[in-house]
Length: 151
Length: 151
Length: 151
Length: 151
Image (cartoon, rainbow over all chains, first blue to last red; front, top):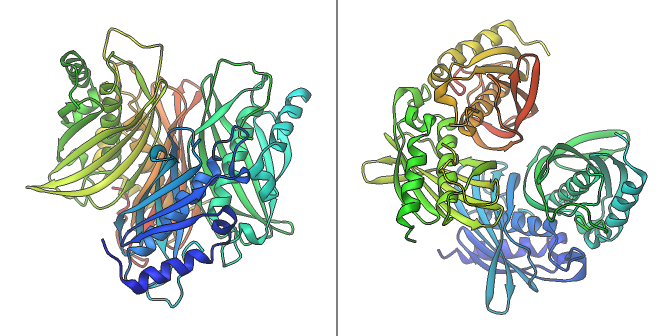
């Protein structure tokens, strides 16, 4: 679903402020209403000794994608915290790129539930590497002036 | 419980090989049989713009601590993969240090279940910042020559 | 995907032996390869005092649907145990019927991951009431003579 | 920690109204501030064909114990809903009795996090059968006249 242009700008500006995503080298590629995609090229810091992405990195981008998907579903600029998440690792992420697809399952007045699917990408092929189910809580009653979520 | 000296060496050597833990600046402080502790001083890369630890960083050390706790419970050098984990964030981790305490709940022949508690440390005070429940699966049938878990 | 006729019979026979599902009044309505649906009409025993389905009932049918979906994905008659699951409750299940849709996310040699979505049904309308992500482990090496999963 | 006598009465009265717990035959044995215990004798309806407790039954009592622990931590009579929970099954619950021990990990203004440990009891021996980590949200702003949680 299309997102208000102002909201897309806010979401993207917030993402730019994230220290961890910058250190990882993560890009916010797609922003729609209630849906975002991230991409993360592999590099040594992010790898297990086997050369695959570390599970903790996969969890971090699943969480980050989830937070921005939650934020993108609101017409104002919300502030979310992660209450909890659960992630299942489905296969080794051995490709050179991670792609995260985060979609809102339910955007409630206080709680927002998001599903993040993480794919290991090699050329044109996506392999389902992990699936996460995340719970976010909105702090404060609504309209704030700065996109702060997860940055 | 005390751990075999050889096993402690294997666990510590494996930890030293972890690229992500080195990039974060994580230290393996305590190794017992079925129990480990990690410590991670704060730095900008690991912080949200609010200055607190990023949830994805907390999840990564919870996962890593869990994997080494699982490995430390075995008298041989096992190879584990993370099947899944769930983490609840209990409070903002605003201290200058994270301390992770990972203890094995059940060490089975195939599956090992671990609880990781993460504390935000300021001086002598520990604040419970997160709690994770993790499932690891042992790959292969037993004795291997290299400590590989989660590195 | 279509399932072998023999496998559908085994799955349905196993379901018939489940004491809990019989006590609840649950029906196995759809059996495909890696996918099943269950239905459960409301009755007082299953309700909170508010008249909605009890979360523990929703969790039980999510788990059961997940186990049969896992079993239905195999061409032989496997024996699964539930390693763990996580369930998010999305809205009150106030309809007169629960419908469970369980689909396999990954059917591995040891671990099978399943997503169960639970809907509260009122007439033709389905409301998404809960979503679960479940991990099953296959016990033993393959072919057994009796469909035992979760019964 | 000791609980206000009035609060214990409210928690116990709420438990008595639970249809599902009555159908199962569950007893609320211990009520403290932020901690409760439940007991559930086995019977055919609750069993898998193997004679062990059904995972869905274990999840239901883990959830119920968690909700009452959350409620018992408040000095007024709160109304909680289960946001989500995750449960790991550690061993077959083959004893004649389930014992649930639910303790509050964090009792916040909106969210309460609870750990429920479930034991299979045979005579004097307790076997750790499952561990759950649960998130509850308090609905409404505080004081209500009726103990409603999870009944």
